[in-house]
Figure 1 (cartoon, helix red, strand yellow):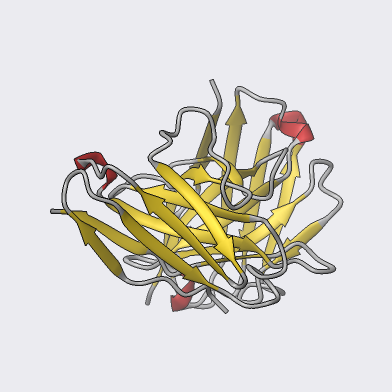
Figure 2 (figure 1 turned 180 degrees about the vertical axis):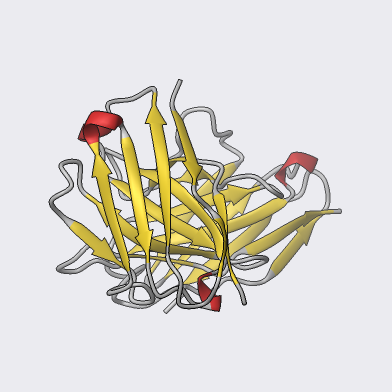
Length: 119
Length: 111
């Protein structure tokens, strides 16, 4: 059964850093493109980052480029998001999400991990 | 910029509701890559429509999608209590890169 499980969220001060992890199971992780999508409290969805199956191609949303870095370890079936210079507006639930292989969209979502940026 | 959705729509049990999703010629109007997601409170989103009108297996045919120009729509027919949720549209906007844009979300209330 496919599973995506995020961890690493928590409370961090503005300007601080945090590393999110996502453990994947139940599918061929190394062959799948993955993304991080976030949702601020009571707000809509925002795409954050994208990484190809081999990890060699990455893209970022305008609001996080230069501050966030996505990576993966296919040997460990894991996805990561390194977040630096965090701002209050980065406060959100961060979802680990699989990009569908046969259409442009997202077919599997984790339950999310909450990141709170506050002094 | 985010796609534009109404903040809320409502309908009675058994009725139909339609949610609009307005973008631009760079996203909705440029690609047939519109998807829709249903999100119940405190749950992760779930895809219900992809490629404008296609349904993943297991999604009832009460959910249907369409597109005209820069505007996409999701129609829910035969409203059920379980359909009360937030709905988000999403469109590819990549061009030379990989980029997607979401709508702000629509709360569907079943009366």
